[in-house]
Image (tube, rainbow, N blue to C red; front, side):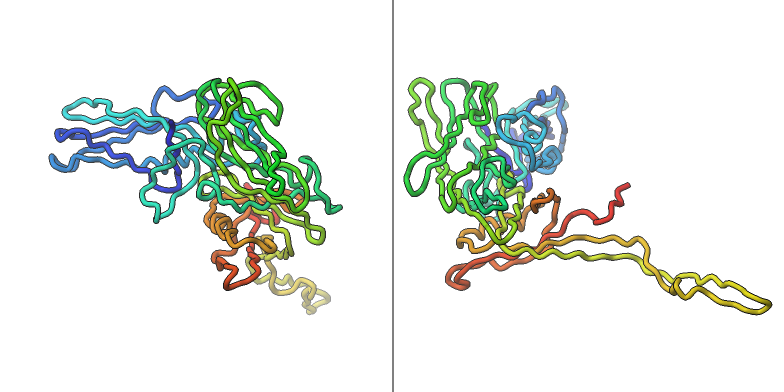
Length: 402
């Protein structure tokens, strides 16, 4: 069983083997899915013991791991799990530790991990990662408050080719061979009937049958399904035996709700959440767009012209001041529409994200949150709950990339 490291919080490894230890060494190996584990360490760290009585050395490996995880928001469905865009969202980690009592080092541990660009909170204590599989890459391991949308201009639910196709559930799992396999099942809340089931196994398949090609760890992104307007679906990950298809365990992931919006053009925001997976929030209601510009003002030189023997004049159309290096930025103020009280978990997760993308029916944009503080609302105090958040497109209106 592999431990998953959340690399935005410190991950500390202590090396203190024997009372006669004089120094320690840590070798860190990092590689992505589809790459071969490196033969030599990506990073080698060494420390000397502080004294003969203070022999413990502590290493924080999280900053080195973060450099290997860049997070991609696109093209990362599970049937193409070796693609670069999938591999960018996590990495494999091997840590070897050594201690020295004289002039040479002796190996003490050799442990493998997976890692995502997530974080832990202060209240949970030291970052111990998540020591069981599957690892659900969602807030708190499953926030039970997803709301997404399948939408078209005619206000009807459409198939997976809709403009809002691309939302998915992310989780890491460890595959140990052909004795068992996984299914991700969508169960209609009202009827209890399984509306759709995705199979995750060792055979080649279609987008509805995700292949696991070898033993090891996998990042699986299961698409959110089409369905009926206003329906809700409970999502389960189930591990089953090949021999008789019996269920070894069933893990509840969360609830998925479908809505249509006929008045406004919804906007989908994707972001890297607390557990390091790609999360989605659909802002259904009113959208306000603004631009702001800035530049440097300078005083113009008014060129004189002459006429006759003594006449002097200048062109009054030139003016006396002007701007240069003018550029602008675009901002969007979005509204969620009425949401449940526990939606504050997703809003907090979004506010703490360092990697946010926005899709406004025209294009995808990297954005930054212009809103730096927000009230987390409750039904008791606020009755109906709507969140308004302002985003700034993270690029200038005029291309000045050099």
